Length: 356
Picture 1 (cartoon, rainbow, N blue to C red):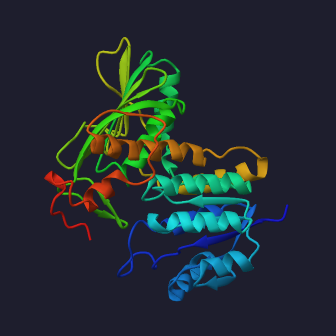
Picture 2 (spheres, rainbow, N blue to C red):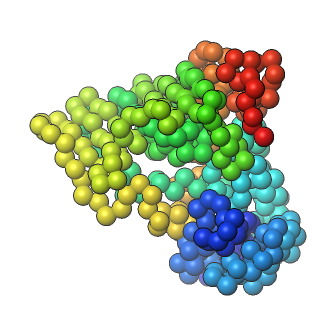
Picture 3 (cartoon, rainbow, N blue to C red):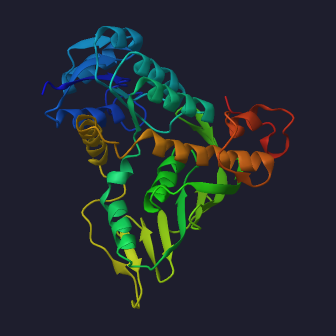
């Protein structure tokens, strides 16, 4: 078959150079495309042409653009990767869908508001576009082995899922997604949560809380818990609690996975060559995007899965705003955290914070 024509929006500054931000995700996308015989990078778009040229020297790409809309209009692309900050995702994903591409793979988190996340999913559905978001840890060895142990009955019936990380939005999007992964994408019924904005900060242009807790219940009766902030810890990145044991993912850098199952008298450390942040996970995600398009199936990182995670993030914020439990599906479209920060009448811990 003729390789899919790939365009990348947002090459970013050259890796490990002055002013470079983030983790160079566009480069990791490119490595995935380069590993597939069914894809070819043909065009790059970045508002700084020198960035695109530096990227081109490493990964190829025949034509360069400073306007992504011009690239979409000129290049007859099949697949587009969106590797920009979250506030740009919606406009770029929607434009790609309207331009007639077959697939869009976008970086996470989905968007700064729930309404923008919904709009991207609607646009993809209306135009028949395969849309996915880069929750690449679904391809990680510790997470896949944890689910394998769970399904094999190593800890009995699943009762509760727990996770700990720095914030609900930028990092929490990964852990909420992983909890859905362990629980077979079972929808959440309700969320009861609280966040505190003090000691928060902006990550890729979006303000995140300094500390928070999200407690929720899935439709199958399993409970979930995500705790965030530097002053909090569950001593594991993810924890799966069953009727007859516990699985911990990310207990420490030296112990990425361990299990205390039925009949055991101590923890059993599971040997793995990969940790929580395997450099190959993004490339594997890209290869799955390509394979799904070729085979006519849903990709592992399908937009519907990302949307349920995003709903949980904003439901957590909404519960804090309401000071009460939130039933799902979520009916708001803003970011409750941002709205509280911008509302001078909110007062309390939200008063006087510098979020600019």
